[in-house]
Length: 310
Image (cartoon, rainbow, N blue to C red):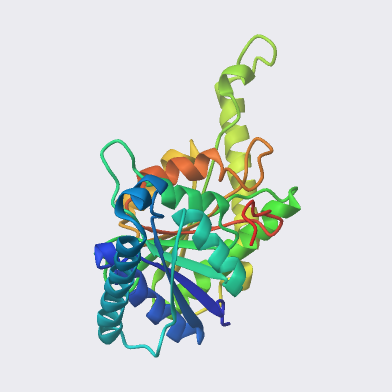
């Protein structure tokens, strides 16, 4: 199945960024998709405009545009793909990128992940895109290899929540589709917080250790059956699928697994929290994205409302 038709690439000429372009070319070839690139420059402040004057500003903008187009043309020569249109704009990088996606009806955004600082694991722009972009966002780890060999899908199992189930299907659909096209192994990981054992063994419930262990065992079996049902549409695909279930803090479990497994691409959902739909991506997702070093693909639920308008 062709998952994507119009792929947006956020290009950064200042960093000689060809990583996302190369990955987009591979993915577009697999999906018979069109690539559209956009470069967003910082706007020139009013004070700078006053200091430089109209003519010098005009020359500066012309030189800046030439520099971007020159770098882009050079990178295009290295990529085995047809012509890719490039739009050059200025403004807030996150907001203008989302507007570009909405205007061009793109269904995927690809971007090289910004190099984090010691204090900040993920950049302001990357987090803004993860929180507000209405389409799946793929952040590519700098310097990664051409293909993804190990893909990990982080899933939440909540049969009683229709919205979560739709997101689960989208995560598994994209993860399996990418695994087939990349020839990658797929790890499907589910983690959950166990019920408060201290409360169960307290004076109110007075459950024994064996009773608590029995509850944990039954819960794990129930979740195993949920996961088995969720992946049933994909078991006949020509890919190697492993399932993993771990009790514990989901953010810690997912981060540790991705690190130990040396995951190349993590596919996960992002859900708004606290009723601020379109602004936050969920505590677990943010903690995971803050700590993993691999490439990531985040997917929002179908009812996500984008706060940015064209």
